[in-house]
Length: 240
Ligand SMILES: Nc1ncnc2c1ncn2[C@@H]1O[C@H](COP(=O)(O)OP(=O)(O)OP(=O)(O)O)[C@@H](O)[C@H]1O
Ligand SMILES: [Mg+2]
Image (cartoon, rainbow, N blue to C red):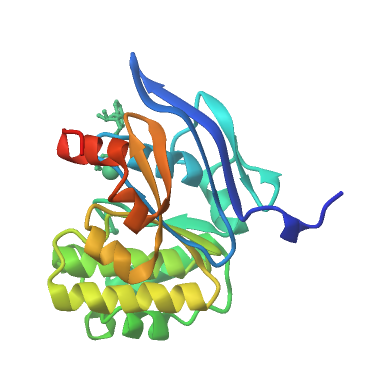
């Protein structure tokens, strides 16, 4: 049998998910290797969040498989996946509003089961240390997004799924966030980053997967994606 290192970190194979008659995911296959920063783009409703939900275990797919380092996780619960090293952020963060920032971090660290998490340091890096005693529900939306990253990191992930973190951040926050994500990547955390803001994505990676109506329509570098007929048609509603 092959060693763990010969498997991709994440292997998603032919994932299918329907809601009623709607094919939200229609056979999606992709891989993320250790150290990768992979962008995931696509128009609204193309299935990006649904894909993240199936990888993180929030929803079960109707078909296909999700494997992490060669181990099948398709039917495993979200907490099992957190324990092997997969965590995610949310398009709309929902921290425990009545708990403080610090308490939210403690909950996340406990959930992750890691005993060596440096919460002080994570909050400093997130720019939230001065708000550590504030109720999370009283943070503004940018701060809640940063807390969402910090909470995910408190579980010591090896793969972090980031769902549209950049929307609504100002240019200074965006470049600071890009720096943080690159730092995480250098520290060995692989990232799958769903994003509409291509200039932001270009700060952190050259590689993208493009989805449309539940299917992968392009995989390659961002520069080629912007020249691809199908991608142009999907985004601009016209041929090149
Ligand atoms: N729980 C659900 N019940 C019914 N339909 C759903 C559910 N979740 C998603 N969908 C539908 O599945 C499709 C894919 O949605 P999804 O949220 O994955 O898209 P997305 O690519 O993340 O879009 P956006 O860029 O707007 O966030 C959409 O048509 C959406 O309405
Ligand atoms: Mg989404």
